[in-house]
Image 1 (cartoon, rainbow, N blue to C red):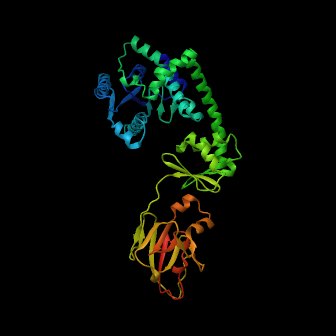
Image 2 (cartoon, rainbow, N blue to C red):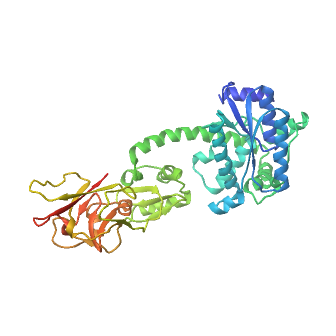
Length: 440
């Protein structure tokens, strides 16, 4: 198996022999064989072990087993204890997802802290098939069905050349000790259910199921490469980003086919699920304002675009500005300058500056988000106008409206920050003192 191991590393160009590799070792057969193969090949390694605290003394026994091995072979050993159940409850995710998030976050830190080149995990061919079936069962794009790749970023998977049966057989023949995780028999976990119950049934349908599944996954991966080339063209046509988020041009998107697949691929990276696609497509032919949410992002159907932005609840906080204030940096950068009116006074021509009649202002001024039902008197108009109508006329998107800041004096709007002054606070022939405000 050592020869197969080295051949696979070479064929997939996983790493250079001079690199120092961090091995993720649980103590199970897969990772202990990987540790053995790296050692026999003479590569430079360090070992990381996660104690998720889910199996009490058994978890501690796994930790001690790996620690003893590393001490015996003079290997750098790093261990971390996690409060996995607490993290899962806090994030509202499964234990499996919690463990994954925790370990990879820690691994990333170890690579940086100790100057290690890459992280090696002991995923093998059975893991590829199980992951394929899990993703297939919950609905997935082509990427989720394309298998676990030999290398992704700083993670390498040098055991993908073999399977669980071969690993166990090799460990027994060479008397490589390993620990058995009792939770691997618990079918409450999806992966265990697939491993224990579903795969054997599929092999009854076709004894060559595993071999054929791996071929199919390989074909899907190659198809995915072609698909991503096409998606690069699609993104250039319909997709753009700015400092507020991503935008997908609706009219252009609707000229493409297959529309459902293309849309899912465009928004999948933001955490949206395939089950949401039909509703989003339906919203594109309806009035603006429909909103869809993933864990961290919001998609809004606006007039011309689907707008995707990081989702944060709109702040209802008020920021008070005293008369002697000269500068604020939160929530926006504003500077304040008092000016005595003289014969040679000139209005600021800067787009992000405004000159106000200081004596008409009531302090403290209030900086806040706009509220439904508010009115103001736009500069140059004699009557009042609903703020919501002003936003419509100015073609504000929904995120633009939510991110707009209002400067108020008492109950009256003074300035839609960076956009429009209220006529009631403008400089007149009677103005003696001026407050100049600049938006950085």
